[in-house]
Amino acid sequence: MKFNTVIIGGGLCGLTCGIALQKAGRSTAIISTGQNALHFFSGSFESLTEAPARMADLFGEAGIRLHYREGVRLMPLGTFRPAALSLEDISFFPKPKIGEKALIVSFKRYHDFFAAFLADGLEKQGVACRIEWLDLPELEQLEKSPSEMRSVQIARTMDRIWEKVVGEIRALVQDEDIIILPQVFGLKDTSVPIRIRESLPAQVVFVGTLPPSVPGIRTQMLLKRRYELLGGTYLTGDEATDAHVHEGRVHSIVTKNLDNHFLEADNFVLASGGFFSKGLKSNPFHIFEPVFGLDVEQAENRSDWYHPQFMHDQPYMAYGVKTDAALHALREGAPMQNLYAAGSVLGATRPEFGSGAGLAVRSALAVVDQILKTEAE
Image 1 (tube, one colour):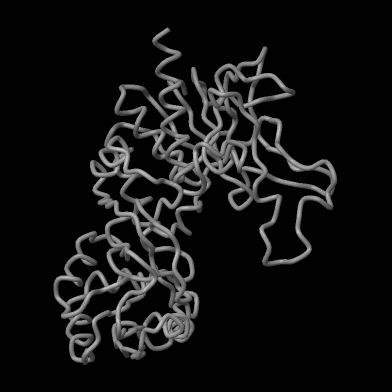
Image 2 (tube, one colour; image 1 turned 120 degrees about the horizontal axis):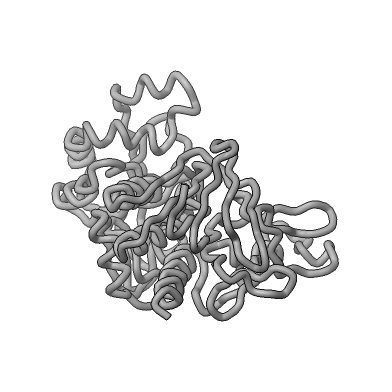
């Protein structure tokens, strides 16, 4: 199978790259192992300090609403973090004070939303908090298995019964000016969070839960649908295992599911993520990129990979694939002519692109620009 560009990685970076290239009239294929960092997405592009119109257009065409306003957002333990560009259902505040009184609502036997910790953190900020628990019969089937009482399964139910939930919450509200709910709404119906806000008598703030992230999975579904509508080929549940490289160029990719059929392309993009998604791996002696054997930025001594205090920033999390200025991946010190690296597989090697979701989008669009520029020359 021959494409203009083959992208390894079906997360935020890979899908952004694929959509932009399809819009530019190029044929692409994405190899996706399945779970990726979008399943842990907070909903904010925290390292982006501006709202690029190109990104807003790309996401808007996929049905993903973004908004931009510098401020802070509420975290699951009642702390605050700077934020600017985010999904529409993420609330911003000008400073770390959300109101005078907050009603925190969760669901009985749902353990992935820490209402007590959230209340404790907010009370330290001077917010009086009251916690209430809804007992919904529609969730009884999920309670039979602990693995089913998770955010995504609850969200599937909430898409159907959100109006009933709003009615029960309305009956609980007293004089609170803030209502805090777990982020388990709007998995498939993106209008639900907006409708909930319009239906309740106080400001509604959705706060993250333990993974999987409902906003993240919704974002992935919408981006994937947009990519496929544009004609892209999305290979779900597959994995790049080897590459055919000759004289500094990649000619084809071997995958786990395609047996002796190779994926050929003019360009290749490595958007395979970091350690979580196995875009980077390690053994007792070194950290390596498993498909192409690319150069990886890392400390020579293994003892320098980590900090002895567990909660401290761990150095190995910043390691990533080395590239040149045009994001060509390096192998034995030389740039691969038609192989680009983007997203979290870069680690902190290219700080000008930001970090996290911001790094994913910025580097993806930079790779797209480089591919189109090279083809035009």
